[in-house]
Length: 169
Figure 1 (cartoon, rainbow, N blue to C red):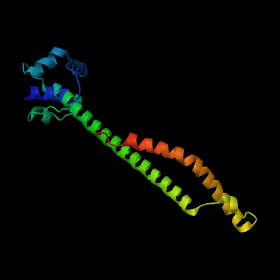
Figure 2 (tube, helix red, strand yellow):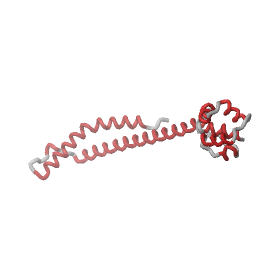
Figure 3 (cartoon, rainbow, N blue to C red):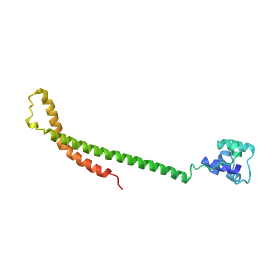
């Protein structure tokens, strides 16, 4: 029982037999003999082992310690799998958000075009001599002029974005 506990705790701490031997000022073969059950450490050495392994003596002498899977390949692969799933889910969520953002932008552009068509803006016939409406009419005309020239380019980009971010099956 002691031999199994020393080995399990040593491995869980990530120590080799040589590293433990150096910390205890013994040779590696001594650690190997303890772990194989061929010999046992004396009481002073048992206290030193418990200090180095940061484990109570009662645990070393008590029930069998189960090796932890902290550094095993299986545990690492399970952690990596969870991380990969989280990254894939985050990527999917981001793609959906961008997809719906493109669709919303497309709808907004179409609505603004419909409003401009419904208003039948005839800025050439506006009366700019009236100071109360001249500034508003100039601002509206500037917006309309810029929107009509830039929005189609943005609309084409947004439609391409919608197709690129759609769910691929």
